[in-house]
Length: 216
Image 1 (cartoon, helix red, strand yellow):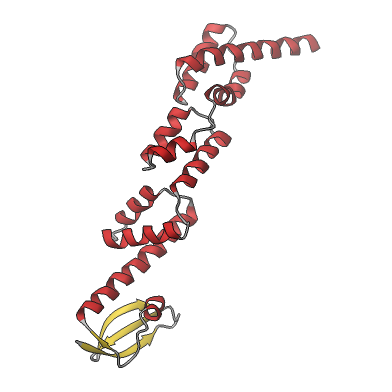
Image 2 (image 1 turned 180 degrees about the horizontal axis):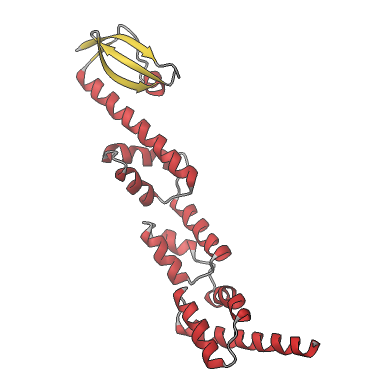
């Protein structure tokens, strides 16, 4: 056992040096000092000191998590991996993730929904490819399926390839089919979608070109 003999604030007043029996033992965030109601003259054990060290790491871990989330939303798995790579211990990461989940700052179901919507808005692709991306980010099967429940692969393929089809200079259907088919394959669509979509876009392209020619 020992006694707290001093609490010295830094200039920014966001951290405090903790002196025990005249020696500086720890530098703590003021939030940790307030949470534990630390004050000069208080008796403190080695076990309490270790607990303060854990809380200090959790505080730093949480601040790092806030910075990562400010950059972009992340899944629980993604955030855990990034924090671990930054050198935080398992216990600090687990506590941080739990606190962020309780406060609603990370939510895999919402993350999956936003990811799927973003793909449709900026890079339309198949439900298969979106599922694979979300599984790689550690989402549960349930969260993944909820995210893609409104996907319509036929319409998504049309949206993905229409502008490319209209810009195509292919004069014959065979070349057009290869070009658009390869593109849609890269977006994760299967043959059962690629064939009818390619046929539909060829019809649109042909009709558009005929309309332009009639105006000339």
